Amino acid sequence: MMTPDRVAVLFLCTGNSARSIMAEVILNAAGQPRFSAYSAGSFPTGRVNPKSIETLKRHGLDPGKPRSKSWNEFSDQQMDLVVTVCDQAAGETCPLFPGRPRTLHWGIPDPAQATGTEDEINTAFETAFQLLKFRIERELLI
Image 1 (cartoon, rainbow, N blue to C red):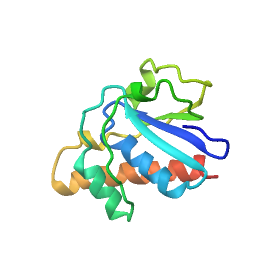
Image 2: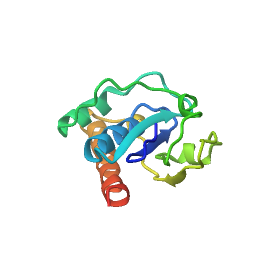
Image 3: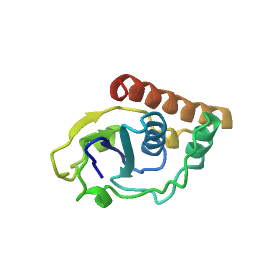
Image 4: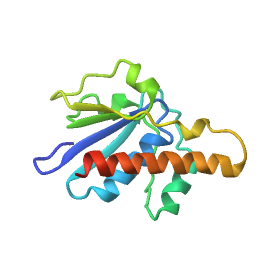
């Protein structure tokens, strides 16, 4: 995945349905051509949360056709940076990635676990989006 002029970044969380998907899209949109972002989960749900897609589109980002996938798909690919975006993934045993990538942990609340009214759930997704965007802009795109 890594090329000499691109930084390969893998965003990991448990379900790969919301936060890591949004982070992948945000970085791919804002970080071209310097970054190539990917996402995966330790226990993927097998589906992308529709609210993730809605949130990305509301911000003018094209999510493409993301899918919820296992981090095992990336275990034999070289990454420059692996970012966990949830508390569960940070405490799990991560697979070894070739080249010993740098790692970061960003504790972002899981909007997919939000309950309440439609507005409250939308707010949880918006909050996660803004936190991810802020961290990406401040820590990766500098």
